[in-house]
Length: 261
Length: 301
Image 1 (cartoon, chains in turn orange, yellow):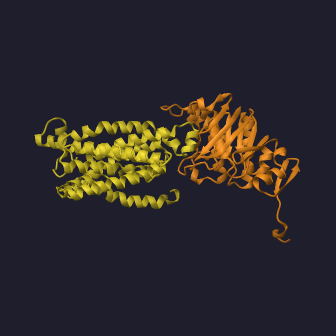
Image 2 (tube, helix red, strand yellow):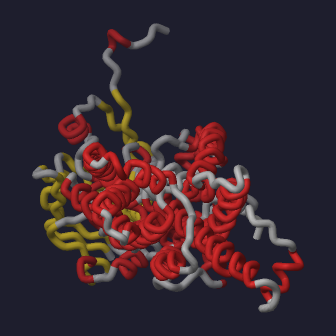
Image 3 (cartoon, chains in turn brown, orange):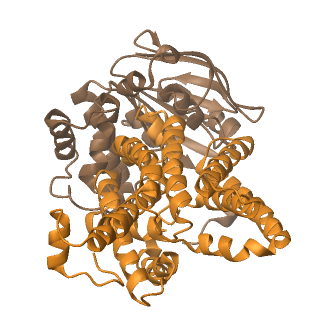
């Protein structure tokens, strides 16, 4: 579904993404992991076509650089790390923005667009909040509104940049479960960046470990999340426990600074 | 229809039907109506341009005089008045457009086409152009009063000529801005997300800024600098109908027109037969309103 070849993103002479190639199959969930500044966000933005890049990104075999903006936007929806949610906009208005790629310049939303938006609102359990302003929503509701907007585009590819930052553990779980449910029920292909390694291992089929713009490890979570990889690329001293749900990454405390019992 | 020369409703009715005294007809058709029409045009242009700039720059406090429009128009008018050219409005118009072109080019050279670099370039361009204007005024003391009167803003008409002069530009400006109303709503989620929705952000910004500037320049060229209309009218509308540009933009055109007609009425009658500059009225209403808005919306700024 997504195929990326020798992708490079350059900012002020510095290569944020330095030649990356990979593919994501239809219906697969692939997650990028890696330390801050590894180039995960830049990679996602390049795949969404919102920043300049060199190399090639193909969606269903078609290069995005050859697509019109609207066509590209109908194929990929990007949920950024810090989505801008104008406080005065209502949930219904915000979710309906997801239909933008389907509308020509002079068109306005029709009944079908409203129906799609209403269905997305219902799927994300936001019914009853349509007329509420975004500024009055809780963090969890807001994140669901963002997801509702992104699925309203009905694009086959969903890009998620740290969708669980700033959410408590309950909402983190809720959002990731929702994405997985959307993926299964809507035949979505998901490419995400996640900080929480344990969650990434639980939800993604495969992980790409990035460091300084390059892919340094790729494969099933159990192969990528090794103590050695995490020490080398995150500079973190961790233990990886194998649980029935997948690898669990636990930081190792220095004995001398542990709280007394 | 109210003014220093009292006309009774019955007289007006006769005049509208083509009867009555010549003097009444003249006051109605050559003085009052053109002035009301001009007020409507200028008010609609300034309020809509204000709402459009606010959408493009995602800042509810931005006004139509941003990007050096006022300073450029002021410099153009000053040059024309001191040089004794008859076409003050044209000079103001050219000055306003030139200022925006300078701002745009400087903003681009500052890197990126982000809203912030454009606004900062506008501040720099405005200071520079205002300094030039002050320099010219220093050397040409005689025209100080005339320039000052223009800067304060006034809706004085000589028949329909100002209306004819401004109307085409204002209409083009309103049409282009209104056509972008849906895209302005989408821009509210930020440049990157709007791009993700398939919008050519730089192009939308370019056309809306061009249209808003054209409308502002046309308004400024016939009425001088009338402040606050472009900030308070869109703000008042948002307080009532919310922030969607689909509602805000058409209402801004209508209420901007109504507001300026009312302000002009006050300007003509408060000290009749003398006239207050309309800019004084709008600023007297606008500044306290502005503070009130700041106080209520502080959290969302």
